[in-house]
Image 1 (cartoon, rainbow, N blue to C red):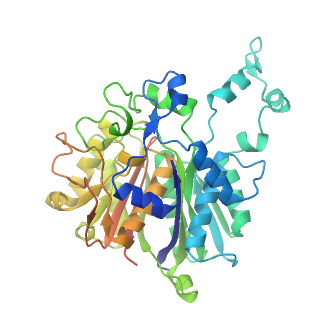
Image 2: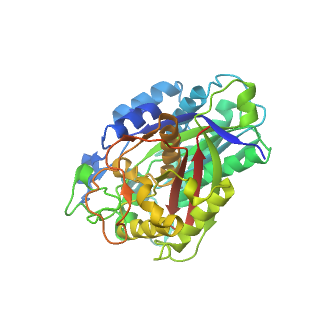
Image 3: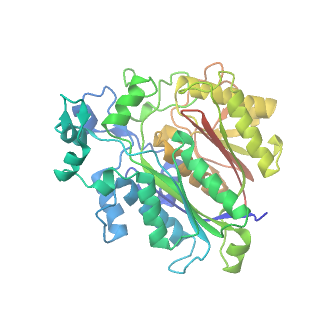
Length: 423
């Protein structure tokens, strides 16, 4: 099988355009979580999130140049992050005959403005929503809002970069970003393609997703903590996750293709596991066994034993159940050695960008290997019982790291783990 290397990365997050800029801000201990007046006006008790503000949108669109009318917000973010990754890989304008696009995002959800416009087209007598009338009224762009967003963004990327050999659109909730990267890696390994743009884009800081996650009890309510202090993975005071949005992409290549064009890899993707479980819609097995199964399979795919892992980039959502399950799972896999393995949870600073979380954490894991620098977990002070005994990194530190395990565990029972190694 072909070895798979990472030759370029790109990212967009709140107030940050560029993967290096994002890594630097996180290394400095900065949180991207902040209150948003729009959420306060809607009556949310927790108005804090990691939203793409107007200044960031201006920077994104400036990099894109001419905007097409069918590009929704997810497509614009994906194009910006993917363009940075493509240029970082040194591919420029040169064509790739055997290339593919693997993109993750969840289906577009209406914001409050679109819901108000849509409500005017409800036929209450027939109990039907007149979607055609809604479109004919000219209140929105059909291509941007009623086409599946992940399909639209994947199509735009394929056209821009000439990647026609393989396309994949993933929507496995919070595990989708890692699933997309794993699928791209497997296609290159099998010799089906030489180059892949793999990543995710998510724009979920709006009314419907926030209401939905609040109702199921996963979103932090802001009752006791506010702002950047809310997201605190593995800490005993954690009370739920903070919504985030953004985009992140990697350029994956076969090692032989990268060598032929003289590219210098950042890291290598050596292992992947994408598994489904059927425990509960909003939670995994309480003992962590399903998470452990996914990690074990990823290590086996990489041909590594647990002793070979030097760092874990945890899913770490800051929800009571998920963090406890993940802590129990890593203890099952690594045993007593878990106290010696540094663990980082990027969501403490980035919030939880759902499908994008696995992609941006893979980008940060690749840069961790390349820079030999561990990123901090913010707000970690005291561990609860299941999370005790873990080496949670609380400030940036240099370390000798040869391999990273990056975890992504999603609602609905979709779990994915990636193993990255030094190139």
